[in-house]
Image (cartoon, rainbow, N blue to C red; front, side):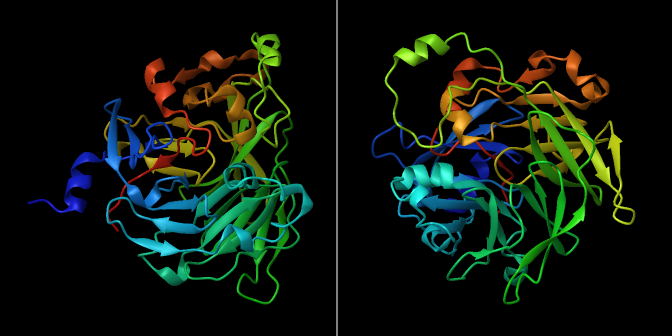
Length: 366
C-alpha cells in the first residue's frame, strides 16, 4: 500500500511545473493540473487543501496560497504539510476606499501583485519569510504564525524582492535596488542601495541570484496591435477592476544586468551559462539545467505575470527564450524569438486560469 505522499511523489515530475486550478472548471472537483515540462504531459492531482485558492510557486516545494476567505497558508503538495500566515485583511490599506467594493476573488487577483517565499519553512521556520508586493506596489512581509502582515516603509513601486545572502533586497519598477532593514524592529524600512541600470522601456523587472551575484532581468514587452479589439468592444464587460484594456502585448527580448555589490555599478551580461531562469508572478529563481531532465541551459522560462493583462490575453505571453538572443538589438526583434510553450495550443488553453494563473514550482517532500 502506498501512502498519499508516495502516490503523489510518483505522479509529480521533478522540476518546474505549472500548477493550475481546474476546480473552477469542474464543479465539485478538488483537482489541480500539473504540466510536466520535460515530457509535455498534463497530470491531475487531488489536492482538496488548495481548492478555490490562488497559489504562488517556489523552488522549495512549497506554495503560498490565499483563499476566498482571504486567509493565507503555506502548503506542500507532496507532504501535505500546511502552515498559517496572516489574513489578507491585515495588510495596511486593505480597507481603503479603492478596494472596498472588490470581491474576495478580485482582491486575490488585483490586490496581491506578487508573493515570494524566501526559503523552505522546514529548513528553518525562524528564517522563512513571505514577501508580498501588494496594493499600489507596496512591500510587506510575514512569517508563519504571525498575526498580521508587516509593511516595509520607504518603498514605492515595488516590482520584485529576494532574500539574498541574509538580507532582503527589493527592486522598483524602474530598476532601483533597495535594501530592507530592521525587519524585526519597530519600523522596518527600505534604503536605496543601488541606482537603476541604464535602460528604460515597456518592461517587467525581475530580481534574482545567479551564482551568488545579484542580477536584474528586464523583460521587454511592447504593446501590440490587437486585431480583435473592435470585436471585444462590442462584447459585454465583466466589470473587473484594474482593467484598462484590452491590452495585447508579447515579450520580444530581455536585458540582464549583474550588480557589483562593492561599487554598486551594473554590468550587462549576455549568458546564463549552464543555468536556466524561471520567472512569472512569484519567486524568480535559477536552476542548474543539467540537474533537471529536459531543462534547457542558458534559457529563460517565462510566464505571464500581470493580472490585468492576463485577463484580456488569457496568459498567452509565455514561452522559452534562448539567451543567445541577448546580443540582439531589442529594436530589431519580434515575438518570434520566444519559443511557444507549451507547444500544444490545446494544452495552453487548459492551463489558463484568471483566478490562479500558471506558476513555476519544483516539488520537494520537505
